[in-house]
Amino acid sequence: MTLSPTLNADLHCHSVVSDGTQTPEWLAERAHANGVQLWALTDHDELDGIERAASAAAALGLPFLAGVEISVTWADKTVHIVGLGVDPAQPALIEGLRRTRGGREERAREMAQQLEAVGIPGAYEGALKYVGNPDLISRSHFARYLVEIGACTDIGDVFRRYLTEGKPGFVPHRWATLEQAVGWIVDAGGMAIIAHPARYGFTPQQEHTLFSTFRQLGGQGVEVVTCSHTPEEIQTYRQMALDFGLYASRGSDFHSPGESRLELGLLPPLPSGLTPVWQHLGHRIRMPEGAGAPVHSS
Ligand code: AMP
Ligand code: MN
Ligand code: MN
Ligand code: MN
Image (cartoon, rainbow, N blue to C red; front, side):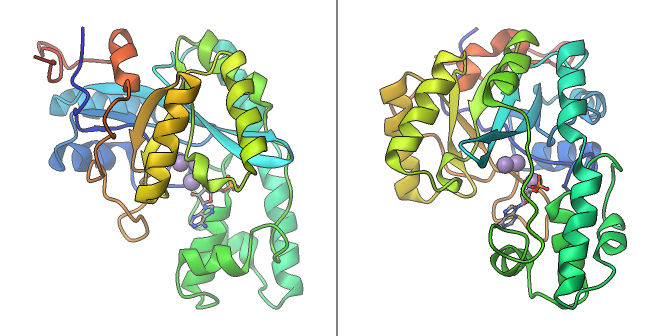
């Protein structure tokens, strides 16, 4: 099955199962309403929303890929690896993600202590009000609380002033290794994809090493179009995809209607000359009953 390169695919977003504000069902409806033709839910380090998302997508006639976004520590920085087309029942993946989530609670308490030291008490309890999954308290939940109490004007302001390296509320954390994340995804039948590469601030040399190591470990894709990439960065990662022989992905990284820069499905097309990830994931797409393929190439 060959799918069109111009398919409206949105293969990166978050629900309340991680740090989004909406349910998997809400996201399926919004994706469908916005004209998405192939959708994936990619919660951080968690697969619990997948069956709900798949059922909601099926009811709407929306082709769906099971996904996840794994937190990785590489070269002392956090890197995100998206897995698409994974089997959400695969035991090694489930166990790996469970271990990756571990430690978030303690980290959150340390974050709250640091915030208290700069005059913001009660941030742990405040962040918890926004948490949909007790295993997955994240910086996004703290950010929502800091906006709520007026300590910051918006989410971007929070990350500029708090919660990032060198700022109050930043607690370094060891996530999964790159090798583990790629291994779990590939063993679960999925494709591993480097998420939003422009966000990491690596030197060109480090980035080259990341891409080649990722490739050697069995990684196959890179997000070229995502909400945090400028038009210039889209061109940069188009070239990186070609240089490293990686398939190209496209995803809004949608978290919340009030916060996200891009709506589900309303993002630029992949630039020309790339092979989209969906051309190699056809066998992993969950089709609604009785439906044909989502938009064939002619
Ligand atoms: P954590 O997994 O707890 O480290 O939280 C990471 C999450 O924080 C990311 O997945 C984003 O949703 C959010 N985040 C990180 N940096 C920013 C930023 N500059 N602006 C908005 N959200 C951000
Ligand atoms: Mn997030
Ligand atoms: Mn991410
Ligand atoms: Mn994300």
